[in-house]
Image 1 (cartoon, rainbow, N blue to C red):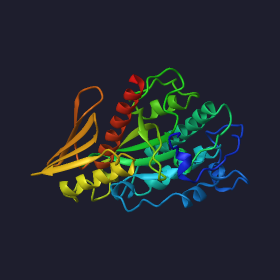
Image 2: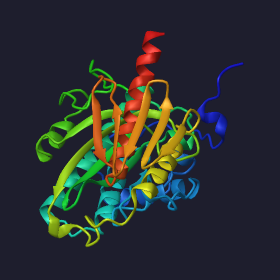
Image 3: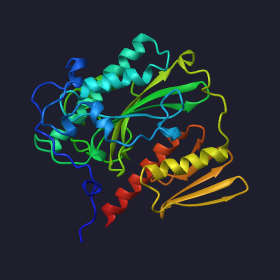
Length: 321
């Protein structure tokens, strides 16, 4: 019997060939009009959202002002850049970001979305193949850091796990020319080098699909942050419960085993990945063999780095086999 695939979970939709032309700077209103007969992948983003479960009950999906992650699906057509610009503005509307910084973020989000379209074209040899809702590109935004020192992180996820020009999988920093097009040169410049790529899993849909996220980060002035940022709002016990739920939401629950004793929690995620919580900090051994320690308050980033470590280890196991 063949192993199950994302398409087996339901919601598989047949898309249409990519429309030729520039994906980088179509008018922002282009994403609002329906594409007749295109199905989910060519539909307005609002229609795509309608078929994806609402996950807003989790802190990880509570949006920037709630300390969570803003998540939206991106269309795989020439409206993707306009959709990314609109979503970036929507997410950042809860922060008093200076106009120049907001413009840079909008521009970079547009470039990441456009490069995702290039990757999908390369992977599909010019056409969009059948895939499930869980496999469409996604844009994520969240605040990274603790206290009043925060960065706004924007990531674009797709299911193409490698760069198109010989880069190693799982690398955090990628060469500027590693994805077709010159968009990442813009991202590298505007982010002052604060960008990269890592392995991860999707967030939307019931089936969490492996892939990669390309990201950039912008340092946010403290005055632009919500008042509650930096104030302790959750106990370590609550946060470790939320971390366990977040990892389960990303498809890691099958092998996850937990033990608790006197302020220490252990999350055994796989044979080679164990997360330790002591008080308000968590630590784990990275695929490179080093131990990484973080504040549990930085919950969304903690969960994302653990998912990345899991995917790198899983890839290493697959290569050895």
